[in-house]
Length: 97
Image 1: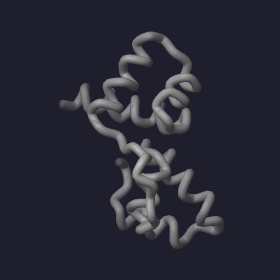
Image 2: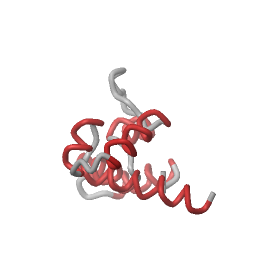
Image 3: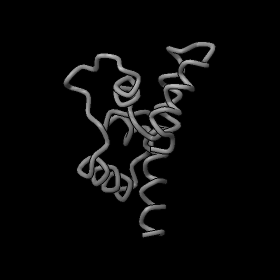
């Protein structure tokens, strides 16, 4: 994630439209809404998934297969922006490490 948990909570508190801000924060941080809601202290259904190594590998595999961002996002259950953001973060990690 790009932002710390405290930054996410502060951003949410200062938002004009807090409910919309949850999605925006998820997109900005390359994660799903459930992760942001969990950070904010909201109850999150057990069937939500978080980014883990397995999900990142699936993202890389789908991207390598030249699927569209829309299709990739649908298959892994995140927004197109979140998929692209996570892909970018993975690539940066590979370059720097």
